[in-house]
Length: 507
Image 1 (cartoon, helix red, strand yellow):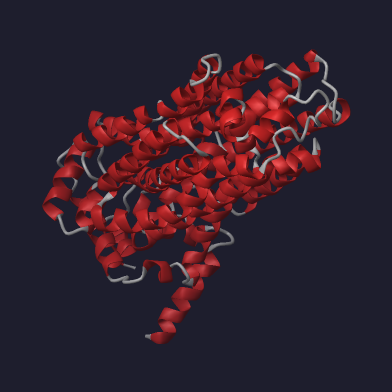
Image 2 (cartoon, helix red, strand yellow):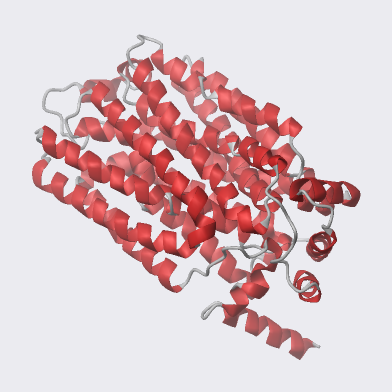
């Protein structure tokens, strides 16, 4: 209870003096290069797996199926090993995000980001130089280590370093960089697809650039005040807080950080602490947000956009160009979240986007169900209508479930369970990303156009969750979430009431 007592004695943290300093902006941008690594990989994978030179070298059977005259439109790419190339990264990221949660606590957020860059760089080298499928998969596993470390450390770093009233917009920079990475990857794939026979190596090798930016850039940024205090460096923590807030009057906020770290230090097993009744609301919402983020169907679009558009009858170049278009819209729409999340709040964006994405999925599914059969090609006009509604879907995701799926879990846990709780969120995301990536092409083969109605069903569920169970966290200081959000929520307050009753009984 120490964090809450400190907040109460100080009148709450909502009025902590702070400016949006250049240091905070710089730190957020450099840290967000972890998102660029992740996004580039998402975008590059689908493009590379549609390149003939890549398929000939590693997946000859898929290449032969692709070029059969009357191969089933929905089953051209149904190959478990090909799906493993994409999904193995996320299985690795699950384990590595757990290791990263320990590193974040022991070595700090900054050092963990540097580890992410190192793992990712080595994975890129192995992938670009791959001589066989085993070298390719090992490289993907190391890329997964980089993604696991980066996705664990970066959102926490930004949430802790940002002033409360700017936290949402700055944290969305992580998702913005993911979308920019996807767009850059799509552009790279478009140009390298005609560079035979090594275009795919260039595509995979250029992933080293964001890893280098993150690794080198993180040397020059400050560690978060919370992480410094948590590791016993109080004087450095005070200096870092003054630098990031742009004011000298940081005593009250520093006291709250110290109170939170002292309370956290008493928790020897933060993962066990997540099993407490009062931790259930945060754990449940963090996990459900990650599951729903994947079951929107967005990674289906981003992983396999070129494959999907080729299935509809667009040529290789047209399909890659279409993927560039969706990637560009993804980037542009994310700016709505950057500037709107701290103005409109989290819930409004999530609810509005759920309606928008539902309409888009139903329209796309209906057109493909009616016009795209096993071996035909749908009319070009309808193919472009489908493309337009996919863009509508991507827009909705980009300003809602994409960025907020990372933002909200990074800000809702108290310090004593923050790294452990965010690990649960990240690992949930990676597990379900792995599942979707591993089974999507098989699902597309079996379910055909019905797969879009499958995702539409999940969108109905996630919209209902945002309406009834997700509290608003806009503008609330990160160490006051329990007191000002969860304990006042119409449903979740009962989990804290029970703890309070038990505490009185024990006293």
